[in-house]
Amino acid sequence: MTKVQLAGLLLLASTIGAAHAQNEVFLCVDEHGKREYKNTGMTKGCKKVELPGITTIPAPPKRVAPMTASAKPAAGSPGATGAPADFPKVDNGTQKARDNDRRQILQDEMKAEEQKLANLKREFNNGEPERRGDERNFAKYQERVATMKEDIDRTEKNIEALRREIGNIK
Image 1 (cartoon, rainbow, N blue to C red):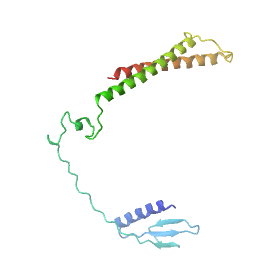
Image 2 (cartoon, rainbow, N blue to C red):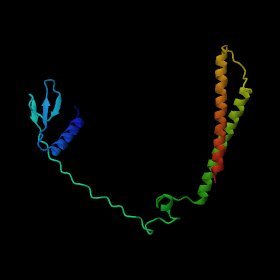
Image 3 (cartoon, helix red, strand yellow):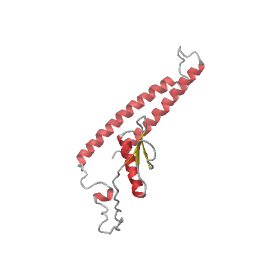
Image 4 (tube, helix red, strand yellow):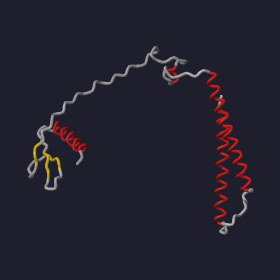
């Protein structure tokens, strides 16, 4: 039994002892060294455990004060948007530079995706790509065609998402 388990059992035993003052707790050790806590000490190898009493203090009642008009954040204040008052501010020039960098990165990604899509469509050949030498089995060829179609669909969705992101930049 680990120390954590032992501490847990002692805590449990102490709460039981506080709840039922007439009950006693005994630590019993068998011939194999196994420790066990019991509420009866009639068996061999048991010793009474002296447990400290538990003092409980009830929590004070929870009082919720209604928000007054003066306590509510104003519409334009930082508290109204959920941002803390000490939240760092960025000037317009810095934000525009960041937006331009982001736009450029997204446009570069979109160009790469469009190039990838053109290559995939060229290889796909309207659903009839060239059969390779290792595809003597028609099922293997169909599996490759299905994978190519999935790649094309995924790339088209990526391009749509990039266009939306670019459109969201101010």
